Image (cartoon, rainbow, N blue to C red; front, side, top):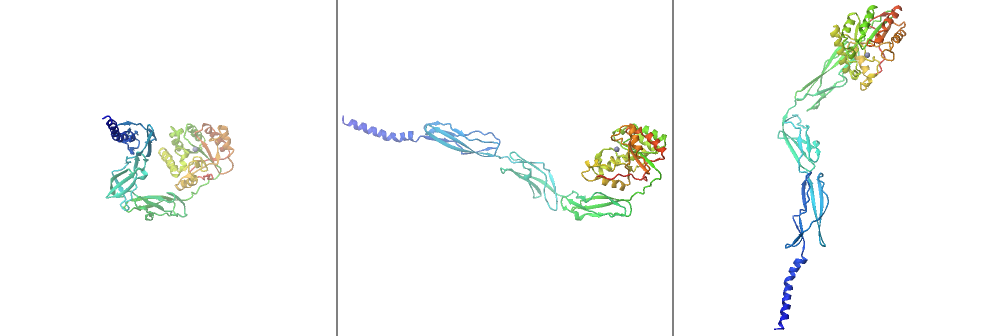
Length: 475
Ligand code: ZN
């Protein structure tokens, strides 16, 4: 019995070893990282909040596992679409596990199209669409330029896709209808001037239609210009588009003749007063009346003249000529012929309301030789145009050859007298420029009159037949 004992002991030990070996191997050698709930790829929305998701990683086996917290490397910029790599490094004792996660930041929101109408008019002949619409994408911003438009099943379809491929499509109703009239553009000016017996050259026009495009060849031109007869002529340009919409415009052509000016015999002085009436006009009229001297007033409606309209009537009734200077006396009238004439006709209307007479006698602010108009006319040489245009419309413009200097350096009555009298010679026509809104200048008039009457001059008011006193044109 004693002998058997060690054998049993050895056998049991052996059995124990044989049984526990796999367990031991399982328990000790096969221990490793256990990975659960780890997402290799995650998608998150652009501009959303990014939260780390490291899954559930532990070290051990299915019986026993110790949770392991990783070291995390990598960043996610939620404001930028793209793919980001996050590296998780798990360490347990001497073992290391590296897991990579890809975060896809995505734009899943479709762009928004706005500014659409319920119904669109589309050209019946070409069905082309090019309407304005706005597309805003949460990620790309304004992508209006990417909007495409097409006609499908009698609807207009607006489509836009953002850079992530999110698409928005909106359908609206369509009327195949063209009610828009074409447009006509004249070649050359809408007012043209031809000298009597000169040649009128028809420059034609071009026409554009929203549906038909260039329809210049369809323009019908009617009306004619008889250049042997002075007057106003109208040329009419008419065009129809394929849907029967009509556009008509006109061009005015003035055929003008030179006036036969009457040069009076003897030495004549034409006193002219610009920019008024004003507070000194009454006093001036008293002096003129005293010596029975007629003069010319180039009136305006500028601020200083307020309250003195009665002076225009008085001057008119006392035999003076009421000429037109301008309504505003603002040099911006020289932008173009239209701005000039709009202003001129306003002062003409005003004078007519006061006197009952339509004045056709004018003086340009700054004179016809002014260069200040260059600041306003965009290089169009407005004075060259206006000097012809006013005559063509029947006006007579007058400059001057005697300057009193009262608008510039001269500020004394004595100097005004000297400036004027020293300019008078033995010529036949002296047109004197003064301003009746300047008291010191008005005060010089009596002395000038006495001086001139004593030397055989005759004072006259300007009329349509007076000799022109024109400066050279500098613009
Ligand atoms: Zn003036």
